[in-house]
Length: 519
Ligand SMILES: NC(=O)C1=CN([C@@H]2O[C@H](COP(=O)(O)OP(=O)(O)OC[C@H]3O[C@@H](n4cnc5c(N)ncnc54)[C@H](OP(=O)(O)O)[C@@H]3O)[C@@H](O)[C@H]2O)C=CC1
Ligand SMILES: O=C(O)C(=O)Cc1c[nH]c2ccccc12
Image (cartoon, rainbow, N blue to C red; front, side, top):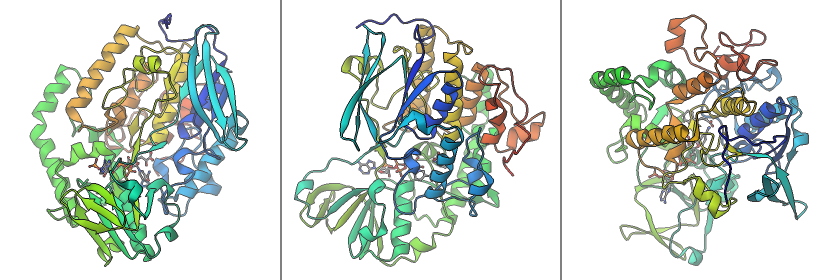
């Protein structure tokens, strides 16, 4: 198979775009491309729009205040404003539905339609997609000039492969299917993992008081973050420019910035050690569960903001924690690596998610240069060796995913409209190599390190805006706010306002009318 890779990775004809996934990334991509006058078809495997917010483990919700989780182009409408600062999953879902309704997107979305295969046809010079409507139990073929993968970080549940699972008489569930606490009634529950999902599930299991016993099994602890540190809300500490000064410089940093970074090392160490102390005290973290990875590096695992009180967990008599791993299953439980037996009726996998690119043919997958630690893309959007294909929201993870995917969608629209110029493929490849080298130096190893940005969110957003020739400083001429103010979606609203769009030399403040930012 041979492509004529044109400089901008653009199709010669561009009329019809296939978008895979109708979560926050797919929907924002649809809006951005519809504005260009393109025809879009959105395939969504679930029976509703909203991705990870359609359904999840019992009691799931947003871990940051709603003000921090907004579409820049459609801030939470008054009638949907949650009374609690931290909305429930159902409230976020309703907000996303309202976004889709506001932009009249549903007529472009095919629900319960799962993409099976995506093949580039050199003959028709277009993508040929095979998808199945699981409700109608029918498969269809469709064509598109361009494809944007928006299936996110959480579409494939990851469950470790253990020996003897078929002999196990109990129930095994991935957390995403643990939608009802009643599933745990009277059972000896084993929770595997120690991420945000595990902590939330443990919390609701303890609060529910229906399980006979609850055991948390984990291989390493992770640093939780309290909702506020010494009176300062944690999101204010994380969503500003000053915060990243406490980390190793971004991959684009020049010599001066690098030197300053080295000089500031003692100060940074002091900052993080101090924060570790406060957190250890807040959550009464004992030495047996204390994370071995230092806090700044541990945050690249995703971070978790917990309710400071932990009342449910500390008062939970049936809860036990074990540091260890499953070795194999037996009929009535599991044998751990240390040889001990644990009686289990329900095993709840809070083991996260993995990626799959199986819908692509092997030859195409090869061109993506998939690594053991994930996919590395130009600006976390474009595979530099595969034309006519982009990823929005699927290969990037920050502390503000709704905003990040919104800015990516805008950037991609700019690229497709020819307003955002791309460097030649060899320069893109060089940028990706630099990025990969840097990530492997500053971030702990994990399955999808190629998509991790987390605390480097501001640097990344600045890059996208710079490419779009927009001012990345969005706080007006206010140096204090610029440095320490929390950056939210509202700061970018004006970029998306009708009539501007990517490439318009915008900047300055967000649209005045109805602005509800970091209040
Ligand atoms: N917006 C929100 O409110 C919410 C956000 N989230 C976010 O979603 C993301 C995913 O969270 P989560 O679902 O907790 O998944 P994570 O990937 O964060 O955590 C997975 C957990 O499972 C463990 N694990 C993975 N593989 C194995 C294995 N083979 N054997 C044993 N243990 C294993 C990991 O251990 P180890 O650490 O040793 O690798 C880790 O403790 C995070 O970024 C989180 O912050 C989650 C819930 C709500
Ligand atoms: O995009 C989301 O769903 C978020 O809530 C962002 C997010 C993921 N992990 C976090 C850890 C701390 C703060 C925000 C997040």
